[in-house]
Length: 118
Length: 499
Image 1 (cartoon, chains in turn blue, green):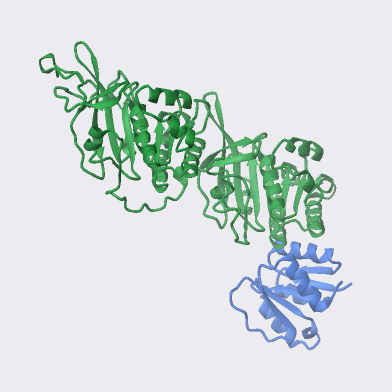
Image 2 (image 1 turned 180 degrees about the vertical axis):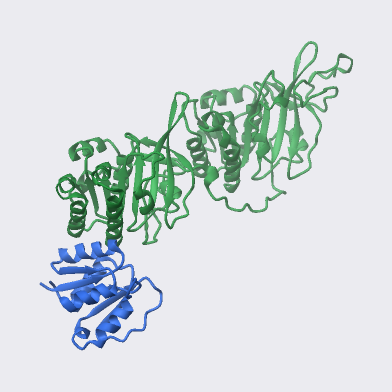
């Protein structure tokens, strides 16, 4: 079963994406900021990371930079999403930026395209 | 069919707008609901929550959406459907295919709010509804041990339905003045309630909150019919369009030469005139004369009254040589009769505007503005209502006569009039004066805002040959105080000679 880590400081979105992705058959873990996400990634590397940009403690852009600096973790594809109008400047080899709000269909299409079915 | 009876936003092509299909409601909502929004509908038992939500549901089915109706502790599905069968919007073919009814009670009892949310999520995944109703939300309220737990559930539900693009209504009992956490979390809060005045009860709808929409504030009357809910947005709550400059040169005559001369040729096209006077003075006949002049020129005219049936009205006019029967028969004149029943003022206004639009009327008589006054649930709004109504009629480019009753005996300085006259451009005052042996009718033009007029006081005579004005009427005193008398020494010997 493929594993996905969802990172967002809004608990309602965490719940929504968790339910949606679990119903698709993925194993889903969640984190509420970049720092907690990093701990989770190091302990149990996922197949895909879906992260918000603006979060407390460590934001999504900073998380991407740390992941990119690690040769192993840099191979995990990342979906960075935000309601912000501008696209952040991030150097990461496997990164996609998507503007919020994402619909359930959008999310499933992105995930399936990046890592295939569960 | 009223002005509101055609769902106003059905043609709205904004993909983010979810129309309700409920007559008048989309206007109140500023266009409709927002796709993926979460809305709370509150109301006491019998307020119409279930009818409203299913009516919107069947409308959404007709618009091509799938609909999910989830019940907690509410009516059983079979009972609910059997109650809906009598309503015109019910579509048996849609049930189970496009409109799915499921119960979430077991999941709520077994797994709490998280289990209920999981059920919603899995059902949405399976049936992909674009519109959902959660009926019996009281159970969820009662099931949550803390407000925080309920808030979290609402938050998560809101995020989920937004992501699913599934516009959702939650039905709950009235919470009164008690704040509930869900009030702040939902995208809209709508209350269905009743207003009591004496023995009458009127249904009212109020949108307390609606994110992202410029909705109509305040309470609006609605009724439940065989077609479901019909709402009547308050006229005075709507934004008024700016009026164009009136065409002061276009005048509409009464076909009563002396009176038309007093008016400088007639009343300005598109204006509103109040014929004000006591019972029996001839207000209705003078207004019918105005309509007769219109139909004689081939215009479309509307009479909207409360007291006399069409047949009686036409016969009454005929008795004084005002000929309307042919115009009624061939449709140039539409006579709308609203007998005095428990009508609501906004419903009357909607019907009035609807018939004016439908007829493309150039002339309108509203005979007895008191009919509107008596139907007003709240008297304090009547002035604003009248102002909005006359404005709305001007937008329809119809030239209007309102009749307003003055008390027969009382001193009008005491303010017994309902003052429709204050809202209109022109006022024609009709009164009785008394001599030692008789009563006389008199008429004068008190106000004509947009043109000069003859301020003289004329005697007004009604007989089988028609309506007539005499040259002049000298000797009346204190006329405006409604105590018009003629001193014996100045008594006018004129007995009403026709010109």
